[in-house]
Length: 472
Ligand code: HEM
Image 1 (cartoon, rainbow, N blue to C red):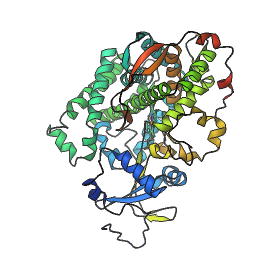
Image 2: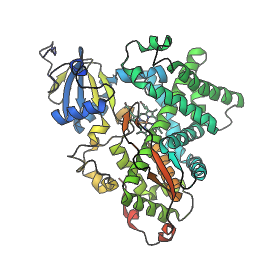
Image 3: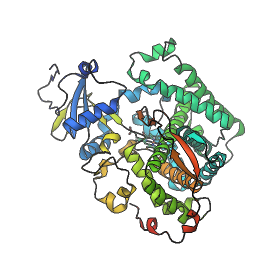
Image 4: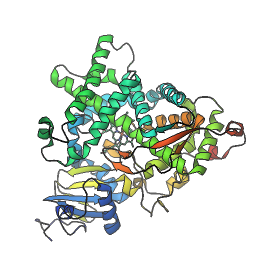
């Protein structure tokens, strides 16, 4: 054992005996961090320590300590190295920035995410979902992951940035982002990756052109808005433009902020919806309940904002889906100063890792954890659990700014699509979560589109159960 514990005052949690580099040559695959976290949780439970080279890493899987890191002691932490690496793509936007810059960016964007404001996006969301719904044919097989990506990309572009992405544009944008995601592991693990990208090195050389395509769309959007003038749209793009300074540096910052919201706002929601369709297809009873609720609440109309609070089973199915397949599957922080965590005293520079994927599957809080059961999210059931065992949107000052938007959007999309179609997994299609920036299905999600069976619309008056679900 060669872990160096230089200062005798520090006390580390139990953990891996050898440096992770030692394991890397044996069994740990860097492209499978979830397997490592599962192993740590299985062997050490609530907290585990290991080292990569000289770096101390603590994996935390305990609600009270998760709260300490994200909320109570949050001033002592910044985002960790992997997040810093995403700067190659995101620049200095709200996800990667720190301190005063972060606060200023959050302040500029906040009004666009206020409850009253996001309500105004509901009609556009439903319209986009109806367009998608009407483009599907009974019996066809689709990659639902791609369909959800294109849908949510168009929704973010239209609602927050007042930009209508034509289908080929949305596809080009999604393709560029997919290219970048394919390279994600290299971007995170390779040393001096910026130089390698610059030199067009094998594997990572494709990053530059893909990023340039993405930037092209963003700069066009900015230019277009400046040319047309804002009118009185008052959307997020206007707010960002009004707050931006002048000169190349300000232009770059604007680009970073827009790209950050774009990526954070579409990829996460698309994954949440994709995993939900998958789980509903695998659980026909839940799908049946959801279908009944949609028909009872909507009685054949397209949904509106006012329907969202009534679509409680949709919301619970989504919550349960994000428990099992959280789109943001892990978060990382680095300590600025020495700090205490429970009985441990840890040095400045320690990296803290928290994984929604692992904590959301803790048997102690979610009995029979692999079972898909939306009823875990009734208000009564939620009240029985500690708060920080379920945190798909994070917590504290860095909590997701788009949370309310995401819930509303997802519920409206689910109801609109479920009204007409049932999505059925293609038998034998391989399903495997792939932990990139978000948790994607590695092989896509091949599903067959089938008409909702006749008779559902007639049950509107006989169905009561979901209407009694209480929201927490
Ligand atoms: C199901 C959908 C979503 C999930 C699961 C999700 C999850 C998260 C999580 C866990 C964080 C915190 C990360 C950390 O603390 O390290 C976060 C931050 C963020 N999210 Fe989301 N998000 C979703 C949708 C959205 C949407 C729709 C938008 C915008 C349109 C958005 C924009 C952001 C931004 C800008 C941040 C950075 C906030 C800050 O640091 O102040 N997200 N998200």
